[in-house]
Length: 170
Image (cartoon, rainbow, N blue to C red):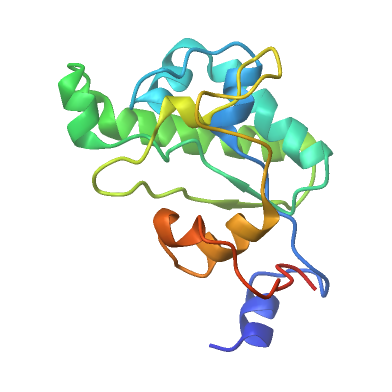
């Protein structure tokens, strides 16, 4: 399937598509505890209304696609906290909250599932603090570094500055 066929099938606009922002970072800024590997699950358990509101806020900000809060719902991580039996329920709740946000917005925003890596990738020190400060390892976004990482280079390779700057977006 080419891009035109995909765009037509999904009823996407003929312009750049805007995705939502980072759920984990937004949860943290709104005061939700995300200090463990099961941060997505924790937010669904303790603050489902906040998760729904974040989706709604991303839609209001112009997102064409919102992403379910399922990135950190990894069965093995849930098992470590005694929550393995909630795997399906949490995934369903995350989808339900995204659908509710879309319904309330009265838009046709698309909903994408967020699939986690098999072995987690969450590192609390890389998430900014609620007071606006940075995490212990996080500085301001570096467009060159992000561009290198997006090209599939490792963090170690990305730390070497590219000799030529490539545009990430047209």
